[in-house]
Length: 199
Image (tube, rainbow, N blue to C red):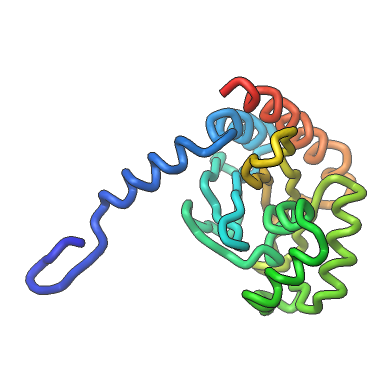
């Protein structure tokens, strides 16, 4: 804390502490490089998210000049059911674990498109498990869509991590997602998974 004329504010030293924690996270170094490449190649905002205590935390974002998203700051915590990253992270859990998370934090709406019913959420998560990726369709911010894939590991003690790209809804139609964006993310995830074994 910094005291400025009797008023306290958080010190920028918290950035240093957060940076150290982020730097030591499993897979972060590999994921940062790869999501930066995906972001530049697609012209869309790329992010890395981890799960912490049943919430999604944004640990990195790469934003090209033409990229447009919700301008979420690094370090932001959100409900998992609001975002593509969060839903990709939830898909790594059992249904009972997802119910526990929903009981703890609720399923509040961020927009009119947010999933707020646990049965609807579990149905969506089942689909994500089958297809291997999640889509956020204006569920957190109107006009923004996102696609995310989890980073998997053979280590049962590994951290829950996912990568995503986000942008204006009109640039994230189904054809572009399937033909361009999803293959870019899946390729990046494969590289991250391989590199993470050697960090």
